[in-house]
Image 1 (cartoon, helix red, strand yellow):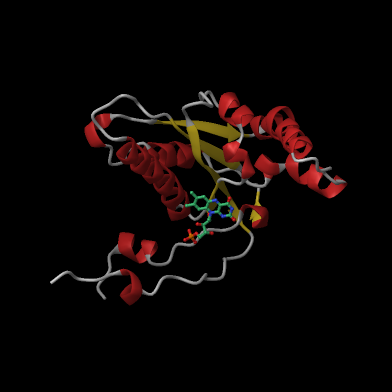
Image 2 (cartoon, rainbow, N blue to C red):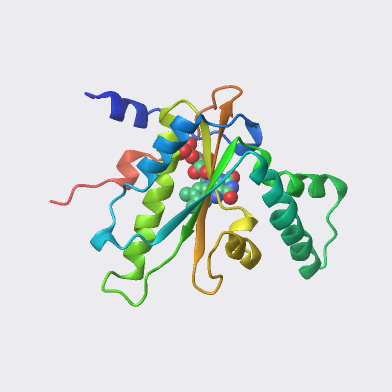
Length: 196
Ligand SMILES: Cc1cc2nc3c(=O)[nH]c(=O)nc-3n(C[C@H](O)[C@H](O)[C@H](O)COP(=O)(O)O)c2cc1C
């Protein structure tokens, strides 16, 4: 198969799970470029139904302390569970597993001639671009939703309207302790067909 530097990279890139990252932040220069790549996505009719919120440095700890941990405690209470010491520690440091987190908020523009589905697809592309751009610089990166993407308090804290907006993902960016092992990948002949 003939490749170029982009396809060569795409055929090898791999996510690194956030809990295995070293929480080293990306450089400011790289972060700016990663964010610029992220908002340069296919977007039918230029709707821009997405907002990016960066959590870096001290803001990660503040977000964990003021938003994630209280939401985790409330969530546990709602399901009549008690969070043990270890789980509480996990929730207190959820956004600090990596060096920076980009939260991608889906803000649909409605009513609009561009269907909701197409706006959602464009938002997914923003997440993909973030992930791929970060990985292209050699950072460890992962796209996560976890329980946090589905809590009203978290959407609200990121500037979204919990009745309308959604979190498409948290893109964690950090450093790699060791290269990840490959995961099971789809068999091309089971997924791809050629209509004749
Ligand atoms: C929308 C979305 C949400 C995801 N959320 C999680 C998650 O909460 N927890 C998790 O372990 N993996 C989650 N993943 C999967 C991983 O981030 C990633 O897709 C997987 O590890 C393989 O990635 P790779 O093809 O870049 O190596 C999510 C993936 C997508 C597309």
